[in-house]
Image 1 (spheres, rainbow, N blue to C red):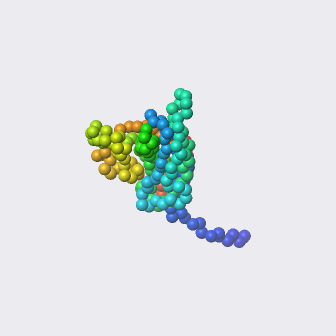
Image 2 (cartoon, rainbow, N blue to C red):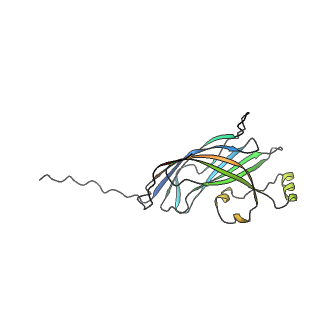
Image 3 (cartoon, rainbow, N blue to C red):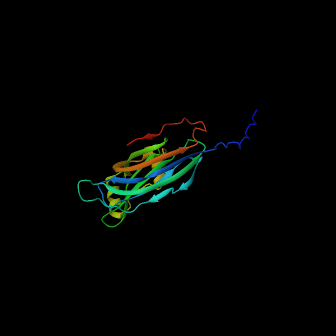
Length: 199
């Protein structure tokens, strides 16, 4: 009877799962020109960033002459998360800024999107909006003084609290591409998913 082979070292089980997000803030459609975009991520207390950049600020882009009136940034996104709990799944917050006729930076739109929870490639369209003053007089004063209504924290748009009391108006759309990879979710009891590709 042949001797049994020695057992190797015990397999180490993962104590957390990982979510890797790559992609880009591709473009935006707005009535304004000379725009730049800032992004950031919001996530729950059980999540940590293990690699990559949590916030980013793009270059200023202009609309190309012709039929297509999109502003193209192609600004890269690259971040990896670690967590033991799916609660508080990351969301990306977007803020778009432009320059008014007097050279002042003005917010042109806020929006947010949930990072897709399954592996795959995704196109997401984020509809943006800005807060508006409650009266025409306050709007005129804001324009005249250059103190436009803004959110104190741009990540406010990724939260649900106190948003119902905010008056807003729609401004444009931002297109974002995501490539998502996950590792270790099945080990912690989360249902495995087949790779998805949506456009």
